Image 1 (tube, rainbow, N blue to C red):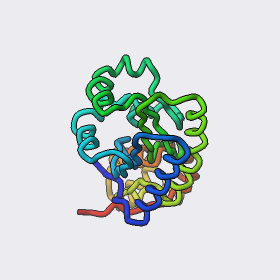
Image 2: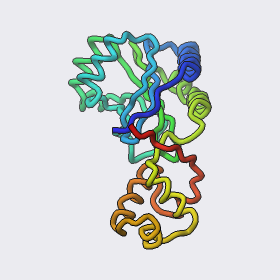
Image 3: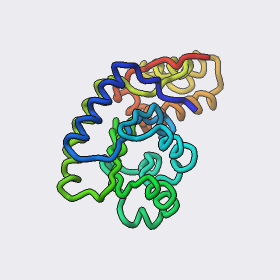
Image 4: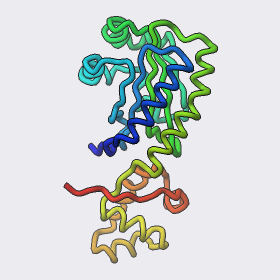
Amino acid sequence: MMKTPPLCYHQRTLINCCLNTIAHIIPVSASVYYLVDDFWQPDNHVLYGISSSMHQDYLQHFYQLDPLHPDKFRGDDLRLVRMAPDMKQQSQEFYNDFMRPNNITDMAEIFIRRKNKIIAGISVLRDKPFQQQEVMRLNAILPIAELMTFDILPDSLVSYTPKEQEIIHLVREGASNKRIALLLGVSLSTVKTHLRNIFTKANVSNRTELVSSGFIIRQEKMM
């Protein structure tokens, strides 16, 4: 699985400032900032007010049960999700075995999206329910979180293999699939497979969107 690049000291400092700002705007028990990889899985977590042991317990036993996990929100464009009562009913194991023992009564998730793909998120944990005014404040925090994220991640999180980069450049030059296959010395089906992978990574549906998306290509480091 392709992970997001490790955060540097400067990036972590900005994230900590953002989490600290959130804690001053709305009282929180804890919060966690994270990046989201190509497979909609959180990684590169930055913890605020939460113990590493509690976080490890979540990663080892409960993350797949989390009703606010980014992977569960692929099909929409929501940017703020609060744990509704029906979620607690549907995720009783998560609520009873993780939230309650850790004195968490309510949770909300801030999703930072680029072209509708979640690229980062902030989990906000509370020992008491959010009030409506506090939910409005969370909405107000979203632009701050987005600006900070786009500042520390100015280009796409997506990495492309050298072969995928060649195909992207040829597509931008207007080459057909047959032409690409001829130039690269591969089969037509191989070109189509590469294109499907590229479209998925770039979060686009076709060649036109790929050409007009304007994303920055970053080469995947070969181990």
